[in-house]
Amino acid sequence: MDLTVMLVSLAPFAMVLGIVWVAVNAGTQKRKSTLSTIETAIQAGQTMDPDTIRALGMPRKDSNGDLKSGLILIAVAAALVVLGWTIGAVEGEEEAAYIMPAIAAFPGFIGLVLVGFGLLGRKKEGSE
Image 1 (tube, rainbow, N blue to C red):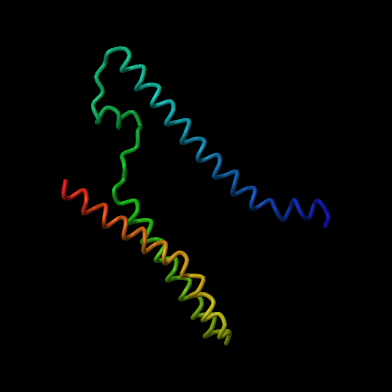
Image 2 (cartoon, one colour):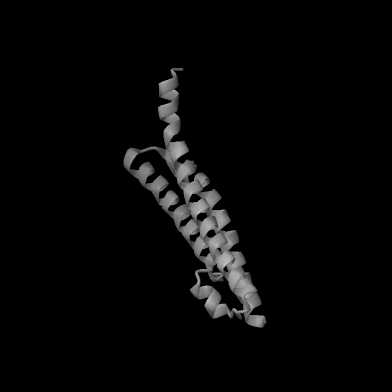
């Protein structure tokens, strides 16, 4: 295989990796600078309450994160099932009506687990 063809075909995957790396690296650098500011303030003798720390840019833990992610994955799974049914109806491809729900099972089951984690976490927070 020609090297240029191979590089062009790998470029979209490398681009996705690059975008993820830049986003993760930027978040890490921001968190490091915020923690450094908090550490300097504490060493100077200032008291830091949670509101002040949040105002400096530290993210608040989102208790609904699992629930939101799970529902999004379930919606993706439902969309894949509908896509399979539509392809089967329009093109007459009966295989698509069986293959797409099988593919949709992966995000669907992961979504169900995340929804379960979100609901269990909500009950735990309510009892404390």
